[in-house]
Amino acid sequence: MKRLLLLLPAFLILLSNCSSRKKADLFVKNARIYTADSSFSIADGFVIKDGKFLGVGSSKTLADLYDADSIVDLAGQSVYPGFYDPHSHFLGLGQVLNQADLVGATSYDEVIDRLKMFHQKHADILWLTGRGWDQNDWDDKTFPTKEKLDAAFPDIPVALMRVDGHALLVNSKTLRLARVTAGSKLPGGEVVLKNGKPTGVLVDNAMQLIKRVIPQPDLNDKAQMLLAAQKVCVALGLTTVSDAGISPDEINLIDSLQKAKKLHIRDYAMISLGEPNLNYFLKRGPFQTDRLTVKSFKLYADGALGSRGACLRRPYSDRPETGGFLLLGPAELERVTKLLYASNFQANTHCIGDSANHLMLDLYGKLLKGHNDRRWRIEHAQVVSPDDFWKFGRYSIIPSVQPTHATSDMYWATQRLGPIRVKGAYAFKDLMKQNGLIAFGSDFPVEAVNPLFGFHSAVARQDAKNFPAGGYQMENAVDRKSALLAMTRWAAYACFEDHLRGSITTGRQADFVVLDRDIMTVPNPKIRQTKVKQTWIGGERVF
Image 1 (spheres, rainbow, N blue to C red):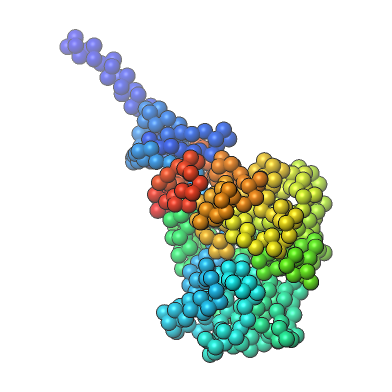
Image 2: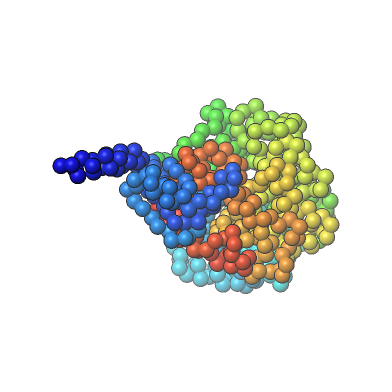
């Protein structure tokens, strides 16, 4: 009895400790965790409850404080906040998965061969569509013409999107269906002619002449496309993606799929510009759910550099008869930005050429006046005049860039821009200095979906073949810490979501990714070989 009385206090202490331990759903321990928090701390454990990080720090300390229903021992593997893509085309990826893949074709003949193989597998389709051709990858770098398409496919309409999404190649059957002639015109676009006749290539706004006759998928088709795109993205560590320009119906579809727990990935949706969409959403206002943010409009100032639709301040070095063009006139761009400034919406404007960047930075600055928290963005900020960089910092404008554009374009960018002007292109470090942050996306399916390709391009300034030796314009490479922040916490900030996620911090949504190697220390040539082991969204394993 006396011994029992002696043991009783120890038992009561143990009982008290057990009752004071907090409940958790999941305990992840023994990992190397890059939190991307304000101090860029490294932890080795965290606990999750109700889809949020409940505690982050030492595995030993957390084990003493929490009782978890499940425990995952990662045995030293590397963990990062779920990767963000703040500028992509999520629905567009789903659409491309149903088309002929032309990315990487090294000649026009290879494009034709790929189309024939695709058509054999899909003999019942009414339109033959594809995406990804790039004449800059061919020996003959001039735009292709329709003759080879006509010979291979005389009886079925063909429409092939260039890799950048700013030019279409079609056959004669399609031109006839769309009633496109040498006299067909749309402001902000070009029907390319040769000997006074359409070649089959249409650039930027002129593509609408063709798109209006191509059968469009219905909402059921789009739902399947979104689910297919999700499968690709989560396997590559993406937990938040974006849709850079979609309709109200498509936004509502995403919302309904997320609420039905079919679409787990989070989406930052930019509303396509247009008068009906402006009228609808300016009255409704921005909104944000657990997995969807609708707070921005997507504007287009110009086209793409590869198709010479980017608007430059001086003519193209390799085609001096043109300097590109604006897709919307300055007066219309000013009218729209004034409407957005009077609302709570963010303006996100596609700007490739130095003229487009110059125009939009000045229009933004005229309204924003100085430092602010509107988080207006320039999408791509691809070619910027040296005398315009300061405007990003003065007006708190966020550069939303795609590092893989630099390593895709580096083979021909100097030809387009000349050796002096090209120094203001893909200037990620110079852009980052202006506000102390930058957002990294991919623009997929224009570029590859894998966010680690962008990470590699940003820090090594090399392509998948680790070319060029020493890197491309290395004065604008960024360090690995900044690159990781640009695809996590800074990207979340650019989407008004940093209070929700973007870092492994107590109270934030439990989105994280486990990799098979440490991208913060592995040699540059090994970065693109990194594989995703696990992807978690809201404390739920989705890959």
